[in-house]
Amino acid sequence: MKKFFLAAACVLTLTHCGCFSVLAKDNDGIETLEYGGINIVADGRKTAAAEEPFIFNGVLYLPLEDIAKAVGKEVRWDKETATVYIGETPVQEEIGEIKKSENGNVIYDSGDIKVTYTGVSIDDFDDLSIDLLIENNSDKNYLVDVIDFSVNGYMASQYGSCEVVGGKKALSAITLDRSETAKFGISSPADLKEAEFVIEYYETDDYLYGEPVKSEIIKLNF
Image (tube, rainbow, N blue to C red; front, top):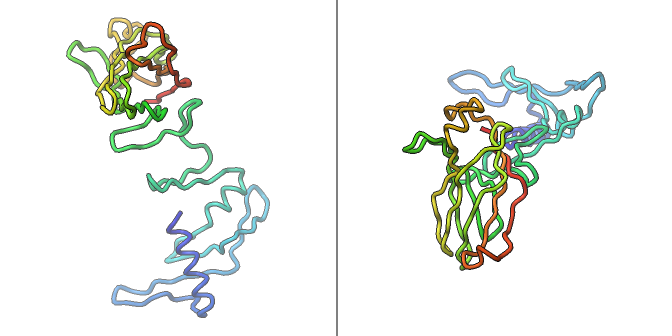
């Protein structure tokens, strides 16, 4: 998308310069630019574009945002991942878009506690594990837990508690009992389709009597 708008800017410059058929010539040949008179019809309706379409070396370039809007789609540019989204973007149910980080997908961030999904593995007991990185960005000690867990639409038992000291990180996992998940047709990471759960955390000293902080429902698609 950035390249397209850069190209469109060049078209405007060339228009003022009167250069409309040849951009450059070197030992490898001639690069050609053609524009003017290119009509855009979307779903039977002629569409006006903010930037003029053009043909460069035989390839037709169209203004993506204008075309998308003409057919009822939104366009969004994600600078961090250098990705153009047309229409729907990947979302985590009720908590917003999945954010890419150095270690994987950030699935929850309250400010104090940040949880990143880093992958799926098999532990020493042949149980499936959904691997997490938990960061405690506060000066308090927290016990982080997973509740209301389901996988591929089935409610399932899991082990996912982790205590994280203030200012520290911990490698954790949501570990599934293979004997149970086998009943759901899940025997390898490839069988995982989706998981839903809620993250909650307490101050360690108030675990028995304190009110936990809870996330909205988090949905992972594998």
